[in-house]
Image (cartoon, rainbow, N blue to C red; front, top):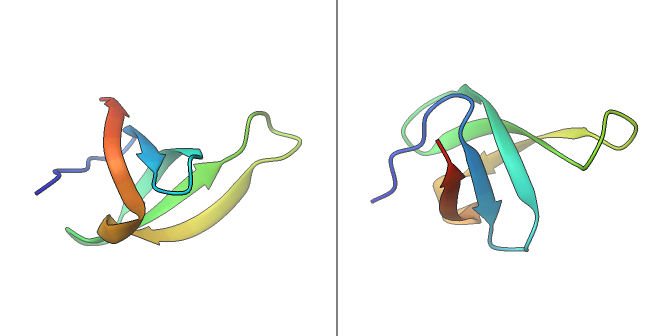
Amino acid sequence: MLKIKEFDTVLLKDGRQADIMEVLSDTVFIADVGSSPKDWETIDITIDDIEKVIDE
């Protein structure tokens, strides 16, 4: 099972990269997606949305 920490960068199963901003539980996270402040979006994701950790 993946161990996701605050500020990890992850690859989502839909191909987007996300930065974990808050760990709500072992399986629920708040993440920012987007390439710059102009298009950042804060979303809720679950462990099932994550393919792998890119950068810890």
